[in-house]
Image (cartoon, rainbow, N blue to C red; front, side, top):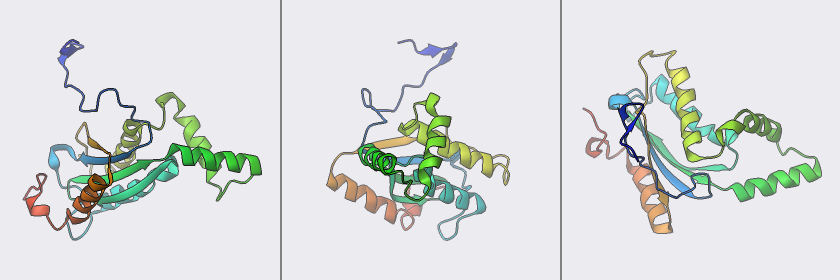
Length: 187
């Protein structure tokens, strides 16, 4: 593989090779702001942009109904969160709704619109979810601060066992208390 694309150096992918990032798994994410700018407020109180980041994180399952939110925290310059993909359960529920003619709580129609709009994206992969989260945050945050931007990539880790899940969940929960020792801390 060439080190250049369109005459620019390429940065190797940080993603796990040969892993389907649309498959059922539990993913731990860290998404940072550009230059680690503290757009999201401070440990005690979220800024207006931090409130947007919080709100849009909670809306992920509305647009991607097979995603369950785990622990998460909005830090001053980054977001930590756990997303669980459970596509089999989502398919079972939708099949039941189609057979019975019910829509649960009127969400199915909204999900169909979301799926149709993003069919060309191979909707349902981790990259698409993070991209859409970052996109909606950016559009709205720039109405408040036109300089808002994200770091171009994100960190992910596939959680493979209960011990790792508990350790990462505790890390997220305790992250605000350990902010001054965090590698993303900027005084």
